[in-house]
Amino acid sequence: MLVMMKAHATPGEIQEVCRKIEEMGYRAHPIAGIMRTAIGITGNRGPVDATALEALPGVAECVPVSKPYKLVARELREDSTVIDLGDGVRLGGTEIAVIAGPCAIESRQQAFAIAAAVRAAGARLFRGGAYKPRTSPYSFQGLGEAGLQILAEVRAEFGLKIVTEAVDQESLALVEKYADVIQIGARNMQNFSLLKSVGKSSRPVLLKRGISATLDELLMAAEYILAEGNYNVVLCERGVRTFADHTRNTLDLSVIPAVRRLSHLPIIVDPSHGTGRREKVVPLARAAIAVGADGLIVEVHHRPDEALSDGNQSILPSQLELLMTEIRQIAAVLGRQVAGW
Ligand code: PEP
Ligand code: MN
Image (tube, rainbow, N blue to C red; front, side):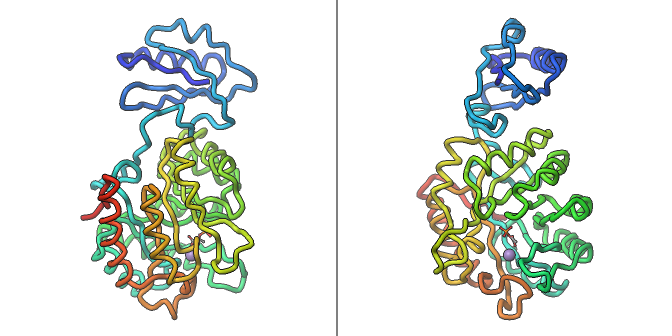
């Protein structure tokens, strides 16, 4: 159930509706839109009795939600969510955000070399993993907190916003202290206890689609986070597993307009994991912008042949620079801009 407030409803009226919802034993989620505020209701097992709510001042109507997800649904807000990271950096909206960096932080020197290139190319966000979910237990697992400390240095030195992954509760406690955006990886998309924990965090969350997750499953995973009160979630298409073996995963770009129709959350594309091959990253990144993605997350390495993780799919700094130039032109066709310095 959604309570749609009138366009001129006062903050006091909104508060009173929330109080009433809580009094009924549910949780209220007021979401302010450009035109009006909608209040999502969670915690109900059966249908909510709307009569008591509809009678309250400032209420326009109560709308039953047809989908299993409520808070991520487009019905809740017509305008799209824009996540403000400060210093003019945003995820969602008309601007396209580029997040770039190595798969894993390997050393201070490596991170600084790549961060300098990312900044020079014009991107505002740096992504590097300190905790890596690797298929093999013998592969490089990340530097842990030492990697997070390097990321903090990167932010201080280059002014880039930091995106980094939490793989479990233990790493989350540390990642939260260092990151501007917490990444939840594909393998953890249905780790419901981790989703609930990031839902309690004050940090925005980048939620990657699971390797065989349907769109509904992705949206339900995001719903877990919003239901805990964290409304700053950006979705990420990173390819799904199919029979195709010319790429590591099959990048499902059709999910972008599908998400747009169903949800107000921003969605970005990861063409690196989506293809797994360096030469395919730039073409698919261009396509992602053309199809309407709100941004890209791209793996970049200055020495990909020596990378400890995902070197095969990491593009070179020079390729990132060219990609930025190309997507600026594609964005212009769509009436959007690529965020820069
Ligand atoms: C990554 O971003 O490096 C990563 C491991 O991604 P995913 O969770 O999409 O596999
Ligand atoms: Mn990777």
